Amino acid sequence: MPSLPLPLSRFHSLRKAVRLPGALLVLTSGLFAQGRFGPGFEVYRQYCGTCHGSGMQGARAPALNDGNWKYGGSDVEIARVISEGVVEAGMPGFGSVLSGEEIGGIVRLMRQFETMRQGRADESKANTHENPRASERMRFRLESVADELEIPWSFDFLPDGGLIVSERPGALRFIHDGVVSPPVAGTPEPWVRQDGGYFALALDPDYATNGWIYLSFSEAGAELGTSMTKLVRGRVRDHRWVDEEIVWAAPPALYTESNIHYGCRLLFHDGLLYFSLGDHDDRPAAQDLGSQLGKIHRVNPDGTAAAGNPFANRPGALATIWSYGHRNPQGLVITADGTMWSSEHGPMGGDEINRIEPGANYGWPLTTHGLEHTGEKVSEHTSLPGMEDPATVYVPSIATTGMAVAESARYPAWADNLFLGSMVSQELIRLEVVDDQIVHQESLLKGVGRVRDLRFGPDGLLYVSIERFGRTGEIVRLLPLE
Image 1: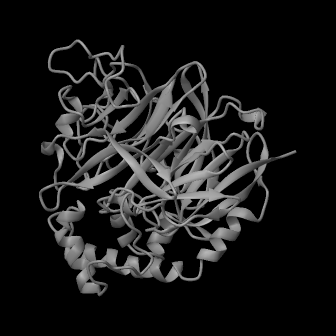
Image 2: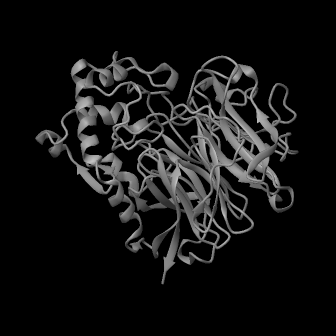
């Protein structure tokens, strides 16, 4: 049976913690009765919070507390969007399950949160850096590495000590001594809708000699309104993207109007490239070994199937598949003993941490702890024979992101611990593993913004990329204190 995250058991009580920039508002059933936020909050939490964040700060979908209204900002226009949905953005309509009064309550709640957010951005950043932080095992503080980034989805370390970062709106930038470069010219044009844009990047293990940079992103299809994940590699010469080669591209049939569940995390290990693909809103495909969707793939650096993959000799199966039955894997990490871990977005509830084994089936959509947006069960099963149970389940969802493992002498008290990012709960979480079981968890950073990626640098320090208020972001590192 999967373990429930110990410090996150707060989600199962009547007490709900909603993190807003610069403040922690503790909402209880008593406060609801007193009308602090009204019944709209419970309706919002059930139907909207997983995608837009518990405090409307944004998660898988845009923030709702910043006054940026793409489809009209009047109360009537906002209510219409909630009722009818936005097909091209992958947002369902809720008019069939919510009454006009309930939708109006959500609109009023949005106005309250929009007002509360004003003027708190600077306070949030100050709270991130000013004071030493005490965790269960050691003290640390944060240091800014680079600021004023636009949704820093992923980053990697350059041989010269700098960094390269992918910004979801579609830019690659270099960072040296805190100075952020202009965007690299000539990079691929992404499809930027809902989940779409630039995703993970990774430097080739032999980058110092071959210069290859790997980049995943959502690409527009030939038919209007369609898109799909694509993986390319290229080099940067004179601050321009050159020599682009396709590492992996989907067949035309996989370019659909869905703007969700693209994946795509990249991980090099022992000279091979692992990359994750979500189900792209095609649930049955995750169980289909003839489909690329809902899988973790293992390939050579040029994208060809790696030797020894589990389904290489099975008729009808794709030779690149390493594991399957995934909804939307967002984090990949391999520990010193060769164990692979993945973080995965569930539906409404049911985010997972999985221990990845070659050839294993992780159940989606036949097993899950999550719910539909209507509140109905996705499946009657949380476990089935022949399918792997998650190591940990997060209910409600926290919108898991990147993962890392501590193999650095800079953090002796955290040796071999896993680290996980979250967008909805805006946390950096430390996980203790014993005999391949997650036995304890601790939230190291709370309410700092959407944690997008995390990696240990050549200096042994843990670096974290953070998105704040929908666009402005930063990369920080954790400095241990004696």
